[in-house]
Amino acid sequence: MNKSELVSAIASDAGISKSDAEKALNACTESIKKALASGDGVQLIGFGTFSISERSARTGRNPQTGKEIQIPAKKVVKFKPGKALDESVQ
View 1 (cartoon, rainbow, N blue to C red):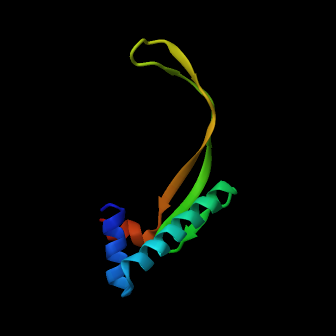
View 2 (view 1 turned 90 degrees about the horizontal axis):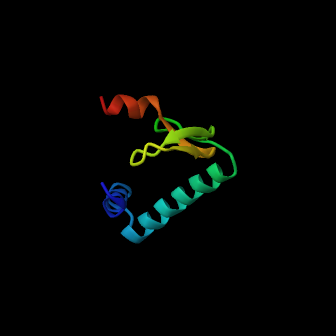
View 3 (view 1 turned 30 degrees about the vertical axis):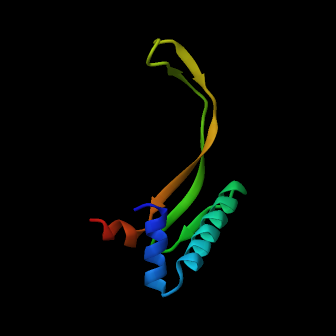
């Protein structure tokens, strides 16, 4: 499912126009981005939890040349599905 299909599904399920559904989806994703950027986690009961994790610096290997390279530390977004979501896909 891509974004336009998701917007259509939201619009039909909620009984609203596609433009309103797209505004709501964009507002939701922006709010999640802002919360994660500020270091907060986002917990949606029954759906899942978005959080930030630190990945430490490490030594890797270039697969083309076999040369060792340094991979810098960075922050990554993690998602842990909630119980209801996890059970719905099994």
